[in-house]
Length: 356
Image 1 (spheres, rainbow, N blue to C red):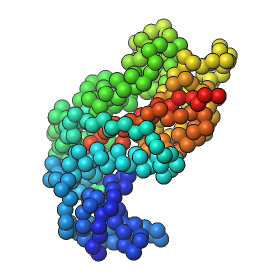
Image 2: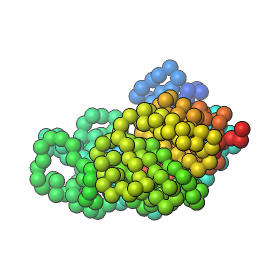
Image 3: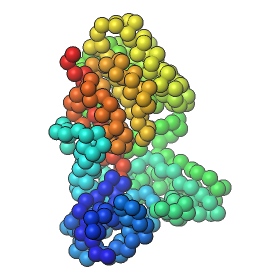
């Protein structure tokens, strides 16, 4: 069928309509006219495969990766980087409005990656029957990869070394930097801008920072000068051990269940100063599943003066922020393009308590 692509949905597929029903077509761009073949039909929508681009967008460009369209990693290499940024900004706004029912969002300009290729400081490849690479799109089957264009040269050098060793079947994380194998940001340049932005959102001086899902202390370590005391919480004992290695007197890092540990910290804050949390800052950087109801309630109970939510999933961000609308206002929301060429979006929201 012939379709006019109206938008690009979160996840990267273009959206056209056939007699009112949404049809999702990968590797298309809003404004294009394409021919596509339906491959899955559902009650309210259909999925199709691109057959031909009849009228291409001015934003269409040639992918730099020879595996694009077969590899399941990148979804946007067929469009200019500038348009990728526009699409991601629109997706954040649409998701917050649709799921969170927010209007008049204080949405700031997306922070672009200085490099749209050769930015990843690590990749995880899989090996099976002498095939080394990534899984194919929509298939649990590997595609052999000689190099990854979105990885920095040092990582591709590690991939080349791995291939010469003929490794056993399994998963291999290839890194540009040595150090503890704990979670860290994948795009060094955007990570630097992210921490600068978070620092700018925080008042000059605070009594306490509670950093939930802190990892090895990525934010905490950069914010030491702003607080008298810092408490970091994470489930990963290895990350917490790394954070503790060079911790000073003002730093405390706790490994365990975030629900329980945050509730304990909220109780401690109330016992110390039950009347005023004006000097307390809370940072949460949860996994894609977002915040649990227990953590949501603990935040409402704490009512920190500054509340910063860093999200890798606009949908769960919208869901969670809707739970805080009666007690907090959204002061700013800033997307960061941590992963160019992919559908991933990082968002930083700053909230402050409403006046009683």
